Image (tube, rainbow, N blue to C red):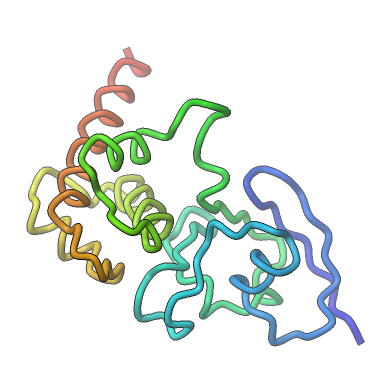
Length: 165
């Protein structure tokens, strides 16, 4: 018996039949929808490599049953750039060398985007490190990640001010 759900993923509607109600959002994204940017790290919600935005909130895709998300809006790393124009967080990660091997980078970027959108980033590096602590970088690129989040926060805030004016 299959279960039908509807999701909006990266702005595109998907009507999906789930043969197994236990499939996680992570496995659905990677195995059924070929969105392999979201990484499978620990598969236990401890490393953050699978971080995506669900209805604007940062969540670990490995911990969420896809069946529980009927009607939700999901944003993955594949959906943050605007064509060839990188999202400000992506550009900041490049500018500040916020990655080494790159495996954790999609989850780090999605977590940073969510953190900034939540209004929690501010300008305190220690606060950013604390609020990004659910995303582990085995290579230890934390200094570049923190600098990237600070830079992206400033860029996004300035852009929002220009748009409001």
